[in-house]
Picture 1 (tube, rainbow, N blue to C red):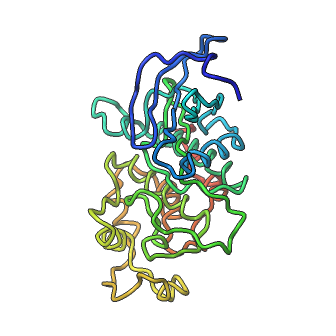
Picture 2 (spheres, one colour):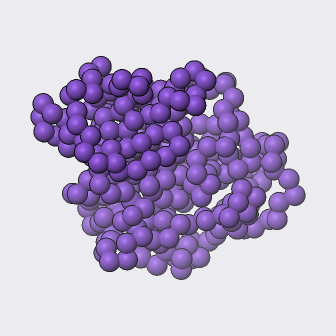
Length: 297
């Protein structure tokens, strides 16, 4: 752990309840960095658990498609400071910018980078649990990197009950919407599937207005799960009296995703299978024919 004397903070980039982010410089190299100062006041044990998780997992996960943790230090007020690489944009900003042309090859490159980064997490036993476009940061060359590991958890305790209130609502897998407390890396894959759909549509695919509406929006778009296609689903805490909607046909998906190839639709469908045990893994998605057809990323 180094110290504050190795860095200068040049300007404040943003502030949240638990952290302030500054643009800074690493004095020994003149490298521009982002310094995330975690506030310790207000936490009974002195430090927010999400900050500890973020440091732990970013130290373990070194990958081209995961934000780089450059350094960690504590300042004179005992605040923990995370020094991160500077990534000026994110996928949400790019998708919302109507002046930015996004081609099929861009979408394919970004999906490939997301899958590679998340596959690296899963291979190392880590579940991200908060994948969404504004946590997918971008460098000026369009390279995408996964950030914000504050909700990440180890996959090593499969019997430990987890909270289902994770993942921003629009990207939340059906098992979470049904209140499952035991879940797997499949929740991250669902989020990637919804982000892929959003990249193609340039608008959120399943934008629920609240938790109950999120479930309704999800089953209207993708069909109501049943015991036949998802054994055990009816025993989940929040599964009750659902309106039965059919799963969309490929022709219906074609009408919604007009520019998508058949391989693109197959990949999206694979990542958005309702039953988590049948949903594609990152490894399976990386082997999709979508990445082998033109345009090659």
